[in-house]
Amino acid sequence: MIEKTKGIVLHQIKYSDSGVVAQMYTRKNGRQSFLVRSTRNKKGGRQNVPLQPLLVLDLVMYNKGSRSMQTLKEFSVSYAPAGIFSDVRKSCIAIFLAEVLTSVLREESANTEMFDYIEESVIYFDRTATGVPNFHIAFLSSLAGFLGFEPAGRDYQSDKYFDMQDGRFVRVPPVHGQYAGPEVSDILAAFFSSSFDEAGRICLTGAQRNETLETIIRYFSIHLPGLKKINSISVMKDIFS
Image 1 (tube, rainbow, N blue to C red):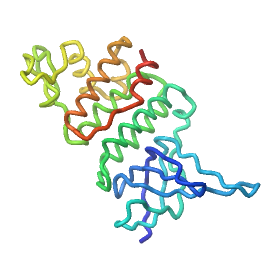
Image 2: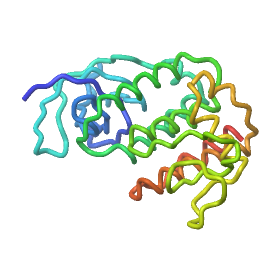
Image 3: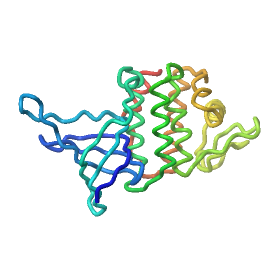
Image 4: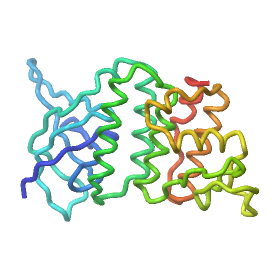
């Protein structure tokens, strides 16, 4: 069956000289793998299509639900985030977020609201000129809600500890030990209640930003036990330290 949908590129690997396998998050079918065939250049050779992380595509696909890898009939660019691809810091964040999304998004489980959130976030990030160092933390803070473990806001300043197991702020450290200390909890409370614009204005040192990012990843791993090690986090720490 031929089907049209949108897809956000997460990752690609070389399949053969005839093409690549691209992991995408699609609006209709969730995460899917596609064989993207290479194109011929003017000299008659084959050339694989560069599919950069977070590129948004319009897809026409042969959808055969029983197959682990689908085939594209054709595709075109719906939104090319040139502002991300041309900026080293933004490109590193894009690679990091694509790696996280590859790990947390489940196979063939559609969630149109989450797709729209990711697409709108890509467009915002591409166009913004401010708040770049904080964007990945703000993005993951909101993404948690779409994945089913939205953190509760902080109602009282006396709730100094963020309980990562229950996803809420508490007055005393929980006995299970899965919590953030007062400084990082204050930072998380600010992110959890902020828009992207507001989050970009949160002032952090490099050390604070790195510790907050580590805490967010730990929070994800508690609620998503199958979360793989995020290799690009070390690059993020170096760039934004």
